[in-house]
Length: 177
Image (cartoon, one colour):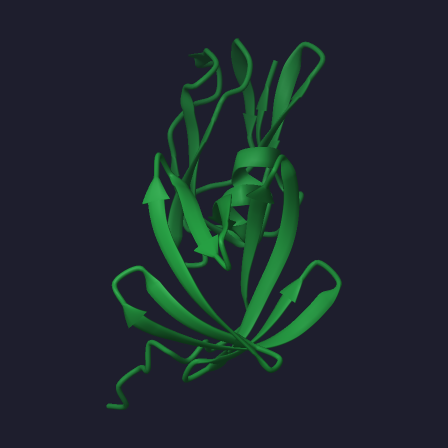
């Protein structure tokens, strides 16, 4: 059996980074310390090597940088070239779930799948009363289980999926009135 190389990205890894209140899409591909990084529309080749715990050596174009990265309160603190940046980095799937997972409608909620995945568990039954924050569905996407919760007070009118079912983005999962 071939051992997986942790420095090799099998497919693009997508992130959303929040810097100074602005959210920026980032996509990384590459292997063995050589990566192609797309930040928004700009694409840059980066040679990245970890020199020590929290210390990275980056070569961007022909310019070398030493970067100190630490984490404080869930935010990455990045120090480079005398500047300090507070960056919140979130894997794209988690970002989609957090920002688009359940949309409230007037008088109810239609929970729609934000990405392709498989229904692992249905937490509610038709006719059940729910309150904001109550668990509705557990969806597995990209090998992570994500729990979706009610955004409104109401009654479960419809459950349109069952455990084991594969769903696509936008598919309705649960209807609350």
